[in-house]
Length: 345
Image 1 (cartoon, rainbow, N blue to C red):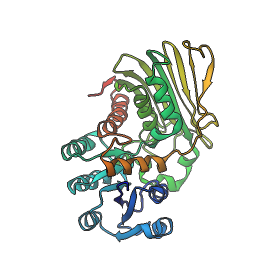
Image 2 (cartoon, rainbow, N blue to C red):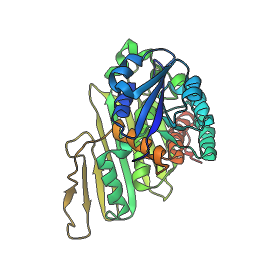
Image 3 (tube, rainbow, N blue to C red):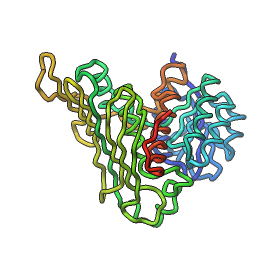
Image 4 (cartoon, rainbow, N blue to C red):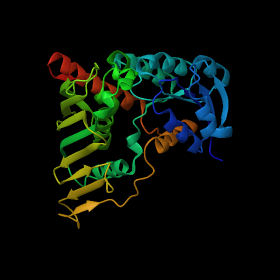
């Protein structure tokens, strides 16, 4: 029988994507039971409805839940400003961590948590859930096989709706306030594309030159528009545009050019992956990967995280890559604030 583990869901009234995480935990066959810790009593009813008998304990205290019920993995989804002490307490309890991003308002607050996780041989996984989407898995395999040759350049954008920013209720939420969230669109959504660019190519971003602004003029102190030029460790250059511009929906793509071809990822389309190579029997033809779009999102990513913790296998994102994504975002913010290019250490 495969190993199964107890998972703690540590959250509060402002926890992001809790509904999606409940669905993911319900579907995860390697999760034997769930402990919910929610001091605001916001999520118990939802948890009982979705998890059924899988929900074994409910607590109003995060630390007490860790101490009394000893989960092997804690899924932490909290306001970014509040998350680091709870992550620290979870690691102190020798528990693996799955953290909803951004999980901090400064990379300097996350770095010592990664150091502690490494020291304790625990996973600290940031919830960059697009990694397990079928088109991303396929794109990573195509790139690793050298079918498009040497990496030449990357262009990406992730654009969401401006409409949400016009609502007074949104203005009061933590992710619309920089002191509580660390930033705006770039740290909430753009971080996914920055991580994927590095994950697919297996190259870190080493230097950035960025700009941020509030182009829509809403009464919020986060950016709704960010753009950056990127230098990868191998010398490749790239760009990212991250913003709230639309009335509804998303525009998104990642384009990767190589010496022998290209890869185009358009996740919102029915056929999200196409690619081209100048080599082999299909040279000169635009090819697609006929993979189903599902499963995607939080459910498969959470399942992979639980499996990794149960078996001490390879996690869907490792500790170093979690920190790398955050460092990249905050380096862009530093560049925008200082008007200078910023190197990522």
